Image (spheres, rainbow, N blue to C red):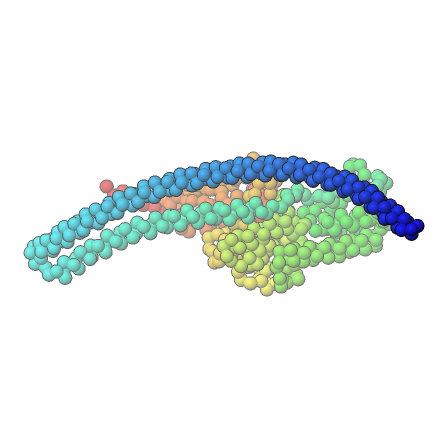
Length: 509
């Protein structure tokens, strides 16, 4: 019974517990369901909001894309309209060109038809003239053609002569212009300095006491110095200086260097004077050789005789009209080379002739005669080519031209000498010298006119053919030359050209 009761109580307790548990589970499930419902509702609301935001964003994007598309369409429409306008303009221009071409074709067709008509009329006229000529002259057609051809040939020769004359004048103008361009270009590219010509050199002394030592006991030092150098040693009141005077620039330079060394050394006696003079002479000789070699190397001149190279170096100590002869010769060589290059000739021959053209001035104080002849003889003796020798001999005389290089060297020499600033002679002295030269030549009997040309290097004298004969021409030239030598002072040489001629003039009326 107790067991039954226990079982019954157990079953009753289990039922009650199960009912309570079930009630608690239902309550919990309802709470979870409510929570889930709330979450679903909130999720639906969030989804609705996101959907609405996305829809708005897509609407804005669509509006933006629509605006860009409209803008692009507008730009493309504008570009298309512009292109259409250009095409329309081109089409209009093309139509106009086609119209012009059509009109030209019509004009050409009309002219062609007119020419055909004229040619037909001309052929008809020629046939009529041929028939008439045959009737009048009783000539055959071939004979008439020969006459017409002869006349046509004469007319053609006349026209050809006129054309040749025009071409010759045009060629002369072009040649003159080209020559001016070449000469101006050569002058602009080359220029050398001018230097003062002098026949004295001044040597400074440390004190007045040195003058007595230079003179020496009973003048033995000064006599030794003058006899060994060949220059005049002038000791005057000039304070702390002595003067060396000589027209030979090389001797004067040797004496100057020797005197400077004597003053520095202080041992002044005949043996020491002789020693230093010999040393100065050797130095000058080496300097001339070195200078000549440098010049030939700079100008690209090869295979020149050593003695000729040394003589070129001597020109460093020679001056003419205040222009250093070596500098002048270099400038002439450069200008001659430029002109030869412009003319397509051998530049080395032109430069060689230009460098050597005044080589005679290095020794003209030792040998009598014009420096051109002296230089030509020296170059010939030392193995220079005939064209170089002729350039030297003829650079002051253009009457007998043997080669184009003679003309080039003479032109370059004149350019260098006449270039402003190259020579120091004043214009007044230059004009007076020319006037004196013409006046002197005009004083001789039988002279009608006298002209100084070539910058005073030549005087041309014209004689009266009625007052003189041919035998007097040579004698008068000799007399004028001798009188110029006696009365005028001038550098280089002056050519006297005397001519006598008879002229007759008539007029066809």
